[in-house]
Length: 340
Image (tube, rainbow, N blue to C red):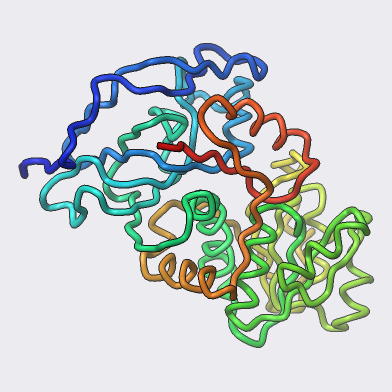
């Protein structure tokens, strides 16, 4: 077993963290002084610099997650920061910029709503960038989900057409920018006509107003249907989304913004003949370091846009961030920066 390497300044014995002792409302998010987590072999301790706030963390706070989530718990399924301590043979070094996400972080073990977090080395993505932490902090889960859905889920290619259902969500906006970077033509939806401009700003070629039925709108533009569709609204919209896709095209089910994850009395014959249906629920390993680096360069060069809704400073503003996310009033990613 290799010895660990640590940053020059030793981590303190305690840190500040947001802890959910028991499920509840926003008041359940309590800032506490807790021990800095000890690093296990094969794990990496990261000093957090920023993290995105996600719907799943609200679910954890409310006690609506599955049984793997136990309390007390520090929430947070993603974050960016610098390596504080790692194994010598990990390929990482103290002080290195890294991102981490998923892997039950913030669910079965403590997550990123803290000054330090420990995670398995396999879910750490190193990077180098001069972009501010508030920008990089918006990316890990959002880009991993969008990129994995488009590549692993849909195998999207340049010149193809893509429908994104749930387009003004953070994953939807991110998927649009990545799909355009891949060379696709993008159709994307919003339930509000006033938000079509947000889709155009993300590079969407054809913003569509979703009134529950999209088939006629899509077929008016593309009589044979789209090559691929990314379903983010959920099972309530899935049957209609399947009808927008050409024969031998693919629908990838990734999210359920409307809250419906199952279909009562499902029959495979609801899938149109020749249309393929798959799903995506990936991990950090689905966003390779070189792909993340490409995206960071594209952002720095102005070619990719990051849909940041609002930036919050310090753990004291986590309650505000979750409240704003729940309200749905501001589209994009809500990011908390831990100022030095």
